Image 1 (spheres, rainbow, N blue to C red):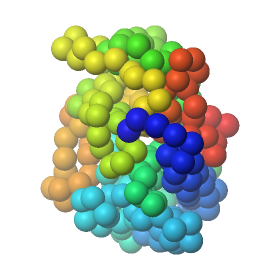
Image 2: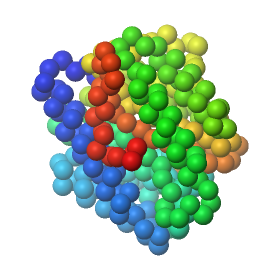
Image 3: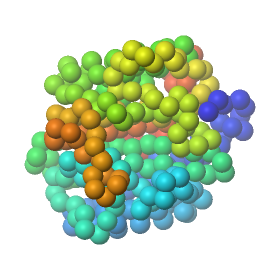
Length: 254
């Protein structure tokens, strides 16, 4: 989406605050023994209180208000009653929503409680790589160069990236141009970031896999080679300098 005036920026900021606050509150609320359904209902209630509508439900009729993925699940995890959180789980929550015709998207992985399975190194790498990538984005920069940076930084940390999941434009719909902000250098992508546009930039940093495959439930994504993945995502507005991070209230970098 191209931001053309203060009213549009205010609209994007309002929905971005809604998804960011929901993600932050869900992270604070989750406890061992809780089900993913309970956590999702809590997030759905926050979105409703803020006047926002769940984007995955609205767009895809997804069976949940948010996507909640645990341990070996990469993304699009269904928040079911059967999914019960345990101490040390690697959890990813992805919250996207619509409000007054504006859409925003954010997500983050974290370790629940004590890091007994040693996932925190992966989570920290994903956070740091996203921050480095976003700080290099400005109008005129090649999208493929940001993908190259993400993959290079992942390799330095001993990880791979998921190549068939990408960031994307967002604003007047959940997914819009640019349709692919990849985690690797796509040599066939000649697009550049444009000033005053809004995009969702996300990492998919992996211990083993490079491709996400869909499970039999038709939603949940897991790696082609197993292992674990950490994802972090902000919706930003591209500028001539450091981008405006619209979803900063999620505090995923804290």
